[in-house]
Image 1 (cartoon, helix red, strand yellow):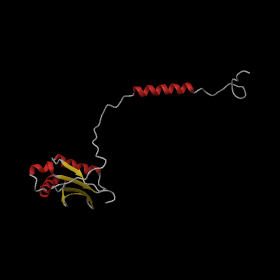
Image 2 (image 1 turned 30 degrees about the vertical axis):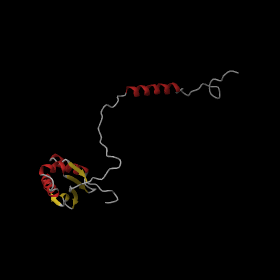
Image 3 (image 1 turned 90 degrees about the vertical axis):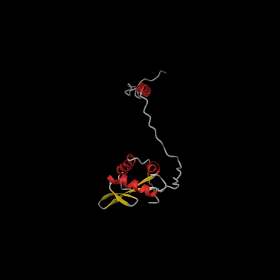
Image 4 (image 1 turned 90 degrees about the horizontal axis):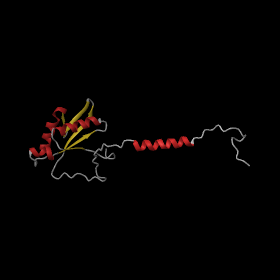
Length: 152
């Protein structure tokens, strides 16, 4: 008996043969993977350690800059004193000197710790703006004062 050609009734097969099509697609996929450009831009990211150690403030009293929502908008406080954004650097320097009497005025910019604290409803851009202003004025140790979600 010979091999049967065609369908169940003996007619021609009308289904396309997709195996060569799949072979061509796989070859094209390999070609594109080999010729694709490899990313050459490296971005340096300093990640914190997995279990951060709490900061010890031996002999240093931090200055807290808070951004809070008020009925009239947002207000900036430096150690509970309301300040304008234009006065932020001067008032922060005064409070840092008062909080750290053991430091020379020249060392305040390098050693005094400034923590920025904000409400959850405060826009991230506002927090970055305050931190940027403080760093532009020369404060080196500017950080974010954070609480755990369960504490708030």
